[in-house]
Length: 400
Image: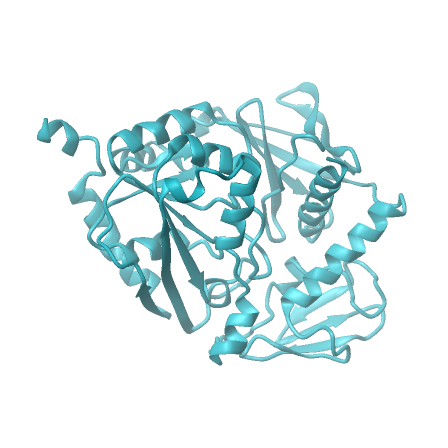
């Protein structure tokens, strides 16, 4: 029985073989500080819930739990390549189609609970852009109630300041991992699923700029703004779109001459006092799109190339082109893929969010396949599509 149980947890040799170099890489330009506030030793099964700030978050968390091998719920995208699939399966990682229903992920998570594993989940299910937490995906609370195991909440701080989603280069600075609290099933048993959604959202809330202001930490780079126009696309002075250029610590508007300087404490020297941080600027962009939504001037479209990924074999990927339209009713593609005409998308009823890579692509699943949409003429529009998705989802929530 002991041998059978050992085979059900992540392979110890591979886990540490991979973890030690990753630990070195994750600390190469960052000083990682661990705080653990748990009073009693941790015993599985548990679900570890953390905010999601950077591509390195999955590497930071094992450092906070060195006595345990974590089972990561990971983007199914990383299981496509044979070698990665070989490693991840032996590490007992659970493939999940992000922001899309996934029966296999549910089944394997329940098995991980039966195997008394330490399951790592990022309930926002996508990487934020401005250093603040997002709401958890719909159904998170219902799923956790069915798992019925202790929840451990972890706060990651400084990760997006050290490695911003939009940055061309990482920064030197401090990252802190705070294992904050454990919540047993009897403490959330009386909550409804939606109340538990709100509870989880509240317990992973984080604001990088409040953290930097409170701690005084600075994050150094040869160019603090390189790539920043990949997420900031609305000028805060003249409200023109896609007229911003970011370089040499400045972000400037070609239309009106607005010029802000980003300092190492991640605050702006700005002619508009209310724009102190990237968070403030991004909130103004959300308000900009929300106003368009309410005034019926929300719709827009773009020509794209599309990459449809076969989720088991990259050699079977297909390609095409067409138009993506964003309306108050959802986000839709119409065009040709592999020589066939297609129309599909996400209606407002099912839209949970739009992940994207700055100045490259935005993405969503359709019929189990991940699609990357690459704008042909203006890669900055990827950030606008993501914010529009958030506004559409918020509109659906307010209707309900």
